[in-house]
Amino acid sequence: MTSLTEFFNKHEDETLKGISHKNSLIKRNIIAHMAINGECTLSELTKELHISVPTITKLVQELVDENIVSDLGKVETPGGRRPNVFGLANSAIYFAGVNVGRDNMRFLITDLQNNIIKEENDFTFELQDRPQCMERICTSIEEFIANCGIDRGKILGLGVCMTGRVNPETGRSYKYFTSSEQSLRDLLEERVGIRVLLENDTRARCYAEYTCGKSKDDRNVLYLHMGRGVAIGIVVDGQLYRGKSGFAGEFGHIPFFDNEIICSCGKKGCLETEVSGIAIEDKMCRMIEKGVNTILREQYDQQKTIHIDDIIAAAKNDDNLSIELIEEAGEKVGKAVAFLINTFNPETVIVGGNLAAAGDYIMLP
Image (cartoon, rainbow, N blue to C red; front, side, top):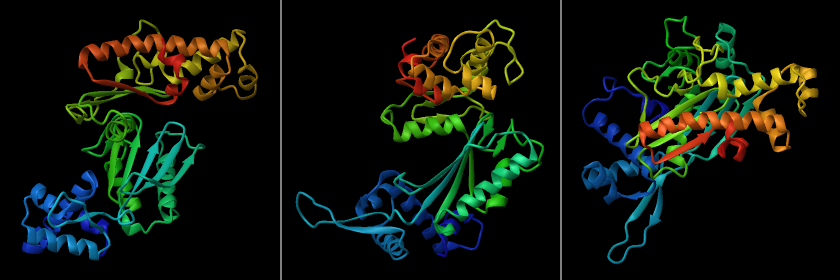
């Protein structure tokens, strides 16, 4: 095997045939089982994968020789012969991840244990539906992977999550970069040369919380993301729910309010127009222009903009206006969450995003 990327990206109709093809598929299943379940013995693999002991023994040894699987030695048992336990070598496989946010990009390399090997942030980035922005995304990913210090052949895949309507099956964003006949996923794969998974940012966060957070034992979970926008991720019976077209979770664009504020989606009165980070920023700017006192006045006079993170920091510094605006948003979004609870009856509702950092100022209302 020349690289894990090639190993996992081989299609069923390519060069491998017969026994070689079957063994390649079994080895993929062994790796996948260890990635999900962790260390295991040969007998456990035989039972879970329904493969004979001689075949499992042979293929696991091949993976050990290829430095993909490690022989971790004998495991203690109540009696009888002690079996060897095997696990994936952390240095065998890596994953790259990119979050394309509205006003920043974040780049990560992780190993099989979800340890962050490399991390970079670009806070000068602004997401715009323009070819120049697409070029910057591609160039930034290429530079990060080239300089991350990891052998490119060991990077199994690139996960890209971004805001807006995203269908991971078609690999398309239906809000950004829609003019090309190629899907966004295919464009990125062509440029970067690594298999790409495209996902909505809120669903990606929901999946991360569900698989790695405190709620991983629950089967029905809602993740409410309160950043500069508002959206939800949905886990039903242990599975991430995307909906027919991959657009499930656009909670912020439900018209909850009878106001004349036009949302980014083009409708009036969406939940986002009152409780999102952008809505709170706009309210703060309007209140400052009306002369309401706040410790953010000097910053606004200099920059003419206020970010939601600045408002949260001011609230924690006992700024009354910031506290009032966050509490008002908390009360309104709480009523919307009550609608979700009555509809989905989840075991857990997780609140994330910028506004989660406001703590009791957002949660108590």
